[in-house]
Structure formats: structure tokens, C-alpha cells
Length: 109
Image (cartoon, rainbow, N blue to C red; front, side):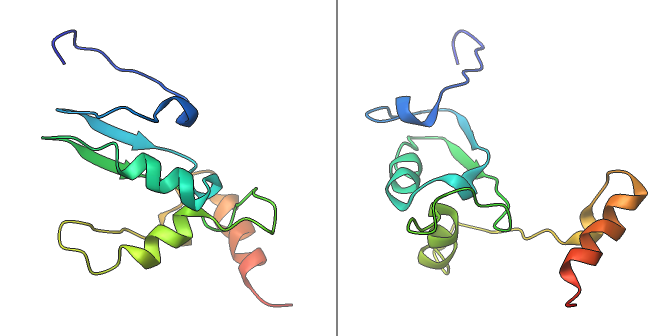
């Protein structure tokens, strides 16, 4: 913070760090493993916050691996100080056709 710095760090390089006075963002969290998610969430130091973003419908992990995001949503439910926000198709702000495309995939055949 003394350097007014934004760091972009691969998840693999987070191990062993404690991030104080920081806002930490994890994007594409649906592709973390349970162990990676635990490691990431436990990097939070004093005066820090974490934002985790991911789309549980776009998991690229092998079917034998559980998504760390899905696991965390279940495991951390009800802990005071942790909140979740789930967006729906109504939150899409791309081209007007994207909403209709998403709807077509969510409607059973």
C-alpha cells in the first residue's frame, strides 16, 4: 500500500503470503480446486477483504475434481462476515441477444 501498487499474481504464487491492508480479488474461481480455494481464502490478513468471482455453469476442471467455488459456497454458508451474491440472466448487460441465448440454454428441450 505504501507503493500504491496493484499486483496481478497467479494463484500458484499466493502460497505462503499474508495480504494485509488489501482488497484481494479471485476471478474465474469456478476453476479452482478445493485445496486452492482454501489456500487463497486463508491469505487474508489484517484490514483486508476478499472478492471471489466465478460462474458455476462454466467449470473447466476434469469431472473428477470438485470446484473450489462450489465447495466454498456450501462450506462457508452461515459464517458471519461472509456474503454471497448470485447473479441471474436478468443481470446480463451484454448485447440484447445474449439474454435470449442464455435463456435458450436454460430452457429444457
